[in-house]
Image (cartoon, rainbow, N blue to C red; front, side, top):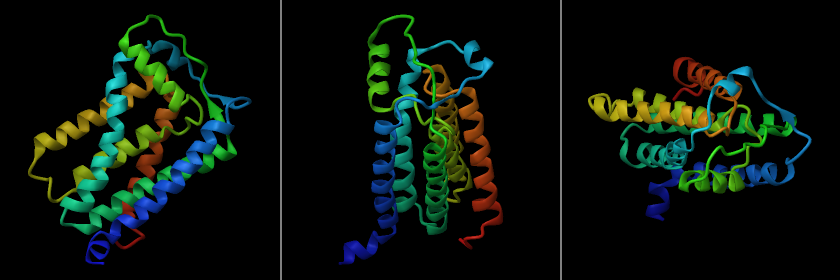
Length: 208
């Protein structure tokens, strides 16, 4: 009981995580055709680069680290709740948009074959280029970068903060160079993140 009480603030994350994964799985398996195609002329200017699969995969660890760090190591519980509320609202908005406006990208043709394109091919099987608007990869990465920048505990660790910022930039670029997202998805993901920043960190209606 002591352990449950100590870590009870993780309960909303666990419950929502299960809910989100179930909803995302439904979208990935049911919205496979007849979706709205998202494309901009800028997408054609960005070449496919399989090496960006590395920062793309690092996103999963980056998000997991942020929740665990702010929930376990950060002494300011307010910053933890700001992060998970920011992530949760953005991810919920993504699910709603995907249900109401099924969307996706054109299939990608690999210009070459190597171990990295094999990794991208495997990525496409589990994280298909559908339900891409707005980019949750971009939104969540920006949300974590904002949380790190606002952390009192990390304010005297500029190198670490810069590393997080650099990883965020690489993840954002990876979504476009892997053809997992359109420039439109990335821009709307950043706009959504900026809007949620104003709500959660500036106006703070949750009184955190």
